[in-house]
Length: 447
Image (cartoon, rainbow, N blue to C red; front, side, top):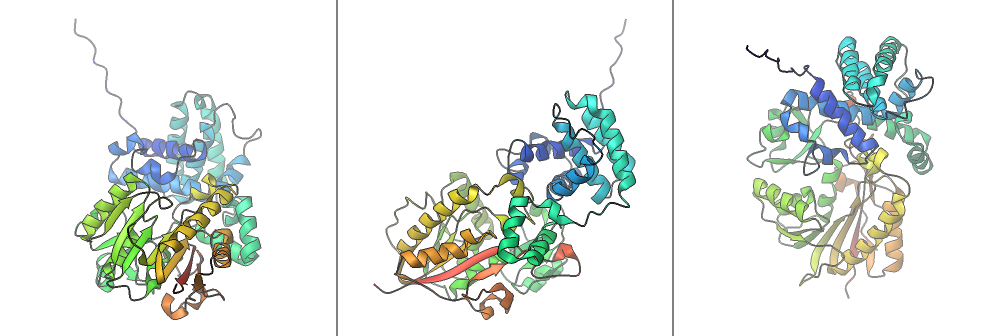
């Protein structure tokens, strides 16, 4: 007697993308794994390899949207839960947030968002008992969409961080920063040459910084110009510090904490003899791959900058120091949920030590540019004030508006660079803004 065939289970279209997005958001919020680490590298989600490009893009947008609007989502969804999110099935919360994000901000039919969310709950051992709850709550979210005010983006910034921004920048600016962080940004590229041509080919525009900004979608490696090394991904703000050295051709330059390598690439293109230092062998390997693609000759060293002992001193040193990265929330919406105010003390201590080391690597008359992608003054303005107070060999070399492409708002009264996420406004918020960045330029006096 022939055995009955068992029909293979067919994956419901779109379910895998939502399941992986749920896994990744859960990884950020409960296991504290950075979003980028889960999207690539050794910690990348194993299921990514099975996703088609379209589903991969949906998954990434879903995860980023939940993290970007987490406070708003929790506020809305939590209002429909009499007893709060189920403590005995924490994944239920993530499933609800992912479902609500689709209803509020993604072009997904309500019935599909609800049905696929229920399926995710049913497939989870602990959350299965709450499948009915997921169905009911998400239907109420859909009904409330027309009247719910999702514009209050301050809910999406942790209170400790919003309080700091209000104290440092004032209420209005803090609100503007939070609003800028609420929009998914366009892609910024630094090009080797002929920015106007690449802007046309990539359907973008050239910013005042020379950056090409584009809304191109899909895998970065498939975009025109990637394989031939015509450009690299770099936020407009991150591209500014390398310009502060001025004419650098023929000079010996050390880029400490060099990964991901965009600034080293800029210095090399400007004609400098660049040595890029990073403590992570894995990041150094990635740097070498990037420089090979860009056809740039940059020496790389895998070493801790605090312990590295080169055989010479340098005409210029660039220190892009490890920091809380609170200026990059537009592009890295997991940052506010992974960092805390307690991180500041550890990072500022490290920054101070790195600054002292960078100063000692300079030749007399050499230039030091220190920068961080943080909005916190302890990691920027205060670091430079403390360094100048303890090291009489150094003096500030003020930055001018002309050096930052005429944007006087980028320059503080002391001549330091301070960009904020809501700068470079555009009618379409997805095309506006840049990372929050600090930079200062110092020179070492002759011995």
